[in-house]
Amino acid sequence: MGGMERVNRIWNHPAYQEALGKLTAYEAEREFCRHTPEHFLAVARLTYLLALEQGVEADKEIIYAAGLLHDMGRYLQYENGMPHDEAGVRLAGPILQDCGFSEGESAEVLKLIGSHRTKSDKADLPGLFYRADKLSRSCFLCPSQEDCNWPEEKKNLEIRL
Image (cartoon, rainbow, N blue to C red; front, top):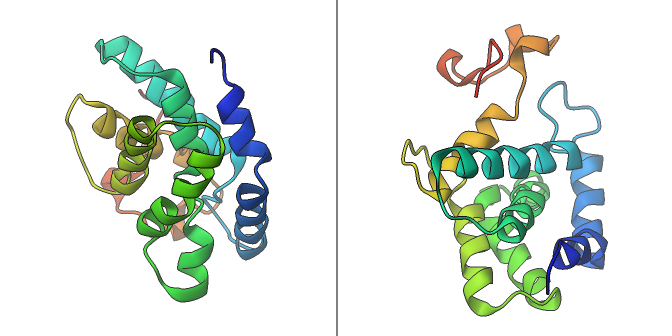
C-alpha cells in the first residue's frame, strides 16, 4: 500500500480521535507547548528531513505514524500519572493493528513512541525522532518562554536544525 493511507486511517481512528479530544481538553488552559496535531506533524516532518539529510534509511509512513501517535498518552499522564511515552505505546498498539501496520512496522513505530523522551545524540531513527521532537518547539517565539520549566539547554532560542 503506497502513500499515506494508513496514516490517514490513524487520524480517523475513533480511539485516536477520542484520545486527541481528551488531550485537547486537558491542555486547553496550558500556557505553552501544547501537544497539538501541528506539533505531531512538525515532529514527523523534521524527523523525515533529518533522516534524508543524514542518509538514515527511514520509511515515511512509519515516521508519520509515530509523529501522530507519540504524545497521545499525555491524557493518561494527566489522568493517572502514567508516563506519556509508556501510555502512548499502550494506546498505539491496537490502533496500528487496526490501521494495517504489520507486526514489524508496529514495533518500529512503538520503539519511536517509547523512546521519544530518552535523550539521544545518535544518528539513528530514534535519535533523530528525539531531536525532531525538541526542534519542533520555537521557544524564541513563545510569550511564556520565561516561565517555561524546560532547562535552558533544551530551549530553541534561535532558528536551527
